[in-house]
Each structure stands twice: as C-alpha cells, then as structure tokens.
View 1 (cartoon, rainbow, N blue to C red):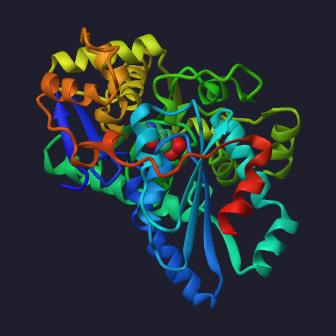
View 2 (view 1 turned 180 degrees about the horizontal axis):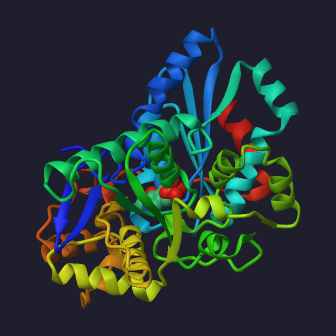
Length: 401
Ligand SMILES: *Cc1c(COP(=O)(O)O)cnc(C)c1O
C-alpha cells in the first residue's frame, strides 16, 4: 500500500513514509523528475537541468533517488553537516548515480537554504551557467511541482476515513501536520480550497516554534536561537511556503514582507483570515519523546516528527475541545531516527551505534528493518566534500565542471 491510513486507539495516522527513502517527500519527488522533463520538452529547453537543493535531511535523499541517472539532469544537494540524523546522512552520502553531487555544509539548515536561494538569484551565475549549457531548478518545496502531488493524499485520506466509517461523507475532518517549510500543510490548504471538507489544519512545530508564535501573535520573528532537535526535518526558522499562504489570504504582494524578513528578520501580518483554517501548536523535545513512548505501549512505533504532530494534536484537542475527527500526517519511518526513537522507548541500548540500533528497534517494535536501510553502513561513502557557506557557489561550479 502506498499511503496506508492506520487506526490506533482512536487516532488515525496517514503513513506517507513507505517510499524509496522512507519520508513523505518521496510522494512528490518520485513524480517531479517526470513533470520537469515534460515541462522542459514542452518549453523547448535543450539545456541540462541542474537540480540544486538544500536539505534538512529528507528532501536531499528523496531528490537524489528521484533524479539519479535521469538523462539531461545533474543534481546537487547541500545538507547541514551536523544537522541530520546518522541514517539520513548515510542515505545521502552513499547515493549512486553519475549525476549526483552531495555536499555537507558547516552551518544549519537556514544558512544552507539561504545560500541556495542566493545562488538561485545570482543572475551573473545563471548567465555563466547558461553559456555552459545548464539551467538551474529546485527540488525544494519552493518548486510548485513539489506541492501539487501532495494535494492528492489529503483527498485519499478523507475517502479512507469515510470507507472505514470513521466519518460520514461531507463531514469535516481535521489534519495535524508536522511542519517545517510549510509545504506539506499548504497542500492541505489547497485541498480544502478545492472543496475537500477539511475543518482545521493544525500546524505542529517542534521547539523551533516560529510558526506557532506567528499564529498566536501575528509577529513572525526569526531572530531567535536555532535549536537542533530530534526532529531535524522541522528545524527551520524561515518557513518558505508561508509566503504562499500570505499571498493567497491577502491577495496582495508579499514583496515588502519578505524584504523585511530578509533585512530585519521579522514582519507583522493580520492572521484573522489564516486562523479560520489553521491552528498552531508545538511540542517540546520532552513531549515528543513522551508521545513516542505512550504510543509504543499501545503497539505503534512513531518517528520523532510524527510524534511532534501527535503531541501537538493532543494539546490542540485539549485546549479547544474540538471533537472533529483528526488525521495525523506521519512523515517518516522510525528507522530513520533510531537513536531518538530507541531512547524514547527506553531501550538500554540507546547509546549504541545508530546502525546497530536498526536491529534493536526492529526487535522491540516487531517491524522489519526497511530493505532500503539493510547494510546501509556497509555501502561505499561516495560523497565526502564538506564546505563553508561562502564556498557553496564554487562547489556548484566545480560539480558542473
Ligand atoms: C520535510 C519534513 C517535514 C516538514 O515538511 P514541510 O513540508 O517542510 O513543512 C516533516 N517531517 C519530515 C519527516 C520531513 O521530512
């Protein structure tokens, strides 16, 4: 099954992590290369397409998997050297394919993403690359081709809920989405706009709760400490796709807001319209870990990102009294985050080698180790470069030389 909807103790989990890289990003990134090739053909583009991507851990591998050896493309992935899990890193640096380039960056995800955006807006570089036969494109969710495929599973989840008898057709259903760059949850907003009876979209943050604070106060303020959490794919302070939502609800240009964000690091926006559909919640590291343990006792093993959503949903339900049914969007396999999951469920072996922990987790959860991760630590580490932020542009040129 591609996206099973699992019911555990009155909770519903939409599992989006059964693709090639075990994260929900596969849902869109396994289709994106085909969309891109078709678009390039239709537009008569004869240049090589260079996919340039910053990753907080999961996008990178999903994009590498999608674009590996795709004719007419090169793919360059930058990841924060110390900001991803051991399994995520191993997945990326062992990537095969003649057109793949994976580079660690000394910095956090925001630094990495900001540099990649700067490279995209460097027109002199774009001209130079064009002369050499390349054009740049993105596999990040700033590419609309990432968002469109994600709309589908909101409809699918809804129909599954009806089929299971959990809701009746036409009644409202809530979704709780573990959020970083706001791409997944924005697809839910598009689904609602298209007519799907969605009640609330609950935006779950980890301790980097810039979105939670924004929904509460109308002040978006990235001037704060960047916290490395056990849900690294949500460690984001500049949430790229929020701009799209601001544009949709205000129907006016977001240029000034975004200029203010890049210069001062903050902006103020009236959130009344947004709050009709969205609600912000967050979970601390402790609350996330506690949730993993609680659900584990109920026979269900969650990853750290899904756990943030679960904990945030519990807080939402308690504070609002909203009794509408809710689907928790489950974004990664627990096997991608063995260290954190094992320590949450109280394994005495939690401090061990993260790859050994694959077996430990498999035994404790009675789940098989996903075949993509079997022997991953024995695979050749083909990609070894680590660079500073100011060297990223040069790395792009070197990769294409
Ligand atoms: C990317 C990712 C998220 C955050 O999704 P956004 O679309 O960036 O909000 C959450 N969980 C996991 C496991 C992810 O890989």
